[in-house]
Image (cartoon, rainbow, N blue to C red; front, side):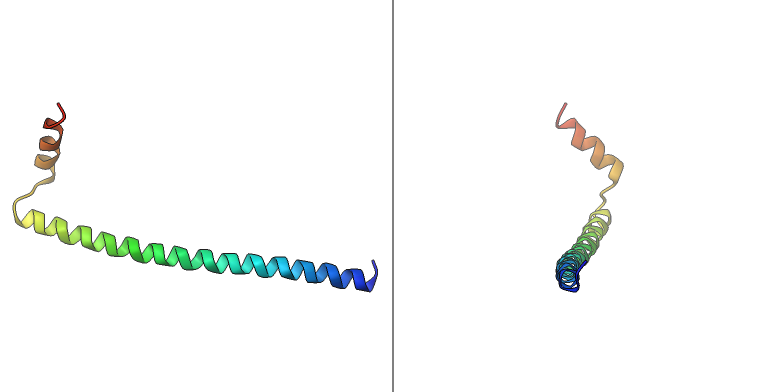
Length: 71
């Protein structure tokens, strides 16, 4: 292989590697944001469940009542 061809090939590989790295960074950022959103949603759900339990909600009762509407 000639030195000029080797340089071009190395340049192409470097461009592809840069694209890949950029894609990985974007993917990682999106994953981190999704984790944060999930964590916030789980906290909110727990808060509402605590409030419901304080007002007398019980899971087994709620499930049996929910099914009676569809029968």
